[in-house]
Image (tube, rainbow, N blue to C red):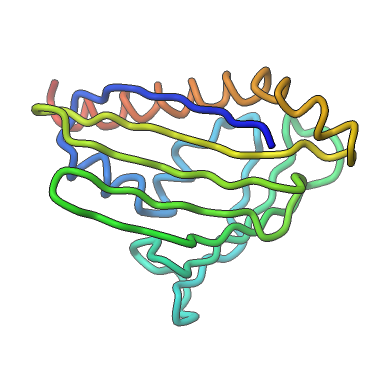
Length: 164
């Protein structure tokens, strides 16, 4: 299994960064336009539609059509863990159905002075069986620009909002 990791300092309060990433609106805002994201359904842990916060057990059903090429790729992700303690928080989501044999994404947030350290950690395998697993480390070529863009957008939205 391959691993991708990216860390960024966001000059915005921990509470704001955590709250932004805890909603489906945050996911929508952070997904690059070229992915052509459609959020099809979001359900909370008790099956309630469109929860305000993505708690443990929340399911996100979406589809993407990168660059408008090929058929839409359907993806179902489930929040499997979510914790918040004094100045630190995390949530973990796992792909239940989608284009990757394995996709597990842990989002971590740490208060750092008046700002926040944001850390994304993804464990994944590319499709294609043994060959996909063998070349999975090269998946970072596609992941790097996407996560760089997500972190840049987080900074733009939240640093502007916090007035820094």
